[in-house]
Length: 112
Image 1 (cartoon, rainbow, N blue to C red):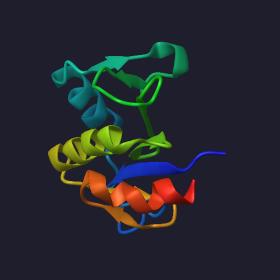
Image 2 (image 1 turned 90 degrees about the vertical axis):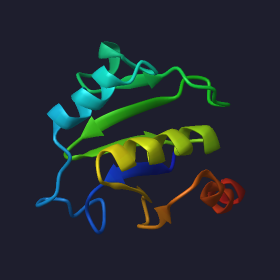
Image 3 (image 1 turned 180 degrees about the vertical axis):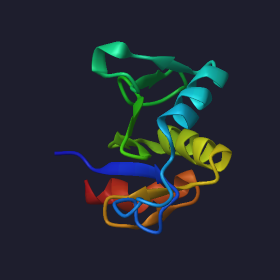
Image 4 (image 1 turned 180 degrees about the horizontal axis):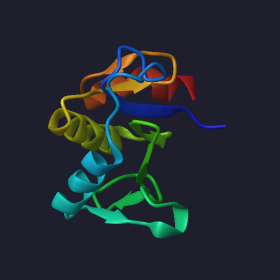
């Protein structure tokens, strides 16, 4: 089982009813970023990231007002932070912890 990180506008990513990132906002980010490539094999909002990463296939997906990925490395986290800034959002882990730069991932990496 993996650990998800979420791009969200909510205080806690699960409680985002009043501050969702819309699917259209996500698709606009994807359209404007040449590093993000739609991957319709995994759904209408799934994308692959062409950036440098230790992950075999770095990906992001949109679901119910948040953007997420599972088990990101530091470079994927850095990309998430960049996307979050463009959406006036933040990066948050499953347990509510915030990730403001890629070095914040260190504690998560030692837990896995």
